[in-house]
Image (cartoon, rainbow, N blue to C red; front, side, top):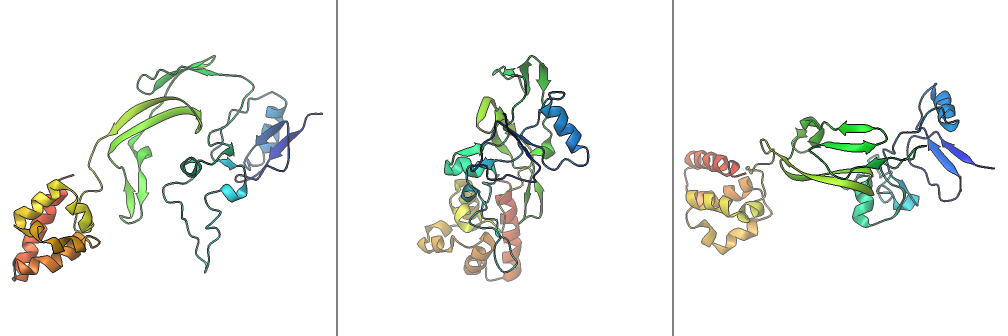
Length: 253
């Protein structure tokens, strides 16, 4: 007798303690979910969905395990950018079912050659993927807004996070949301030759002072408030000069 487990859940579950011939995860589909599940089990419809999450081998492997539920009514999200499948890949931890995993009643063959964002999916059709700029955005809590980081990226095409069959480089152009400014760490400014050139232009001989480096953990604004007074005792003139300097530094990136 074949055993099929139907998972009516809202997220991953620990499946290590049971064995089944097949697993159909329907993720709380609503009042027509029963009919949809029956159609897929009987072969009247293909289970074409893909996992939007990762199923770990053990609950203890999940990224939130050391942090959840937190304490003092606060939940601590300690994963940073390594959320979901990124966390497992970063820690090199094997998983039960990777992000994007899914089976169907048919098998498909993908052409590995990419032409822009077009690729061939054998026994179905040629597909074209459209990637909008806003889909590249991420929320920056410090800036309190959605931003699109510019730079070089790599697009991956696959049947899951562990089965990549093609990749293509991508360059995101536009206005850099992370330009240098008065809130940039002074150590970051000191590490950029173009930025230090601006500092020297406004404050000649500044970098010859070995004591400047001890201010590296402060923001540029805080560091300048301690440094500029030695160059320009007039606070009004000093502030005007600093605003021009901040503007010149911001134009570097």
